[in-house]
Length: 224
Image (cartoon, rainbow, N blue to C red; front, side, top):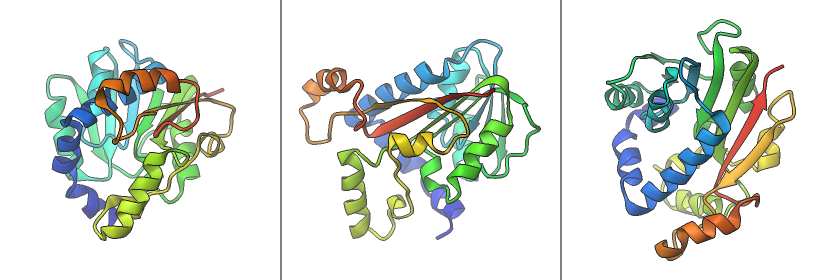
C-alpha cells in the first residue's frame, strides 16, 4: 500500500485515538512541548509540514499565527480544513522532500509526527531549512527510538500487516539533531506508559523532564 493511500484511510482512526482518555493526555503533553519549542506568535507565517488532521495546526492558528498546512494525504488535509475552518489558512497537497515554496518564505517551520514516515529524512529537514527565513525557527517532532513505546509499537506492527508502524523509522534525540546542519535543542515528552495508573501520569511526566526516553521527541533549530 502506497504511503498516500495508507494515510487517506487513517483520519478517523487517528482522531478517535486522541479522543480517548490516554490519547487526550498524550496530546496535551505533546502540544505543550511543540508550543514551547515553536512559540507561535500573532502575525508570524508558519509552515506546518505533514499537518495531518490539523490537531497541532489549529493550536498555532489560535495563537494568531498565519499557517500554511501541507500533507501528502488529501483525506488528512480535508479533515484539517474542517477543524480549522474558522481560521484563515493555506492548504496544499505536497511532499515534504519537495516543498512548493520559495527560499525563506516562512518565519518558522514545524513538522509533527511526519518525519518518521519519510525515507529521506535529511532531505525533508533540509527543505524545512530552505523555506525558513534567516533568523527563523525550525521545529521537528517525531517518535523516539529510546522509548518503551517504540518497542511496543514495533511488536504490534509485527502482528498486524496493516499497521502504519510497519513503515516507521524511530530516531533517538541525538539522531534527530544530526539531521540538521546546525546545532539545536532537543527535549522529550510522554514518559508514562499505557500500563501506568492514569492518576500518576502527571507525576511521572514531571519526574521524566530532562530525560531522553520520552516517547515523543522534539528538536528546535535556529536558522542562521
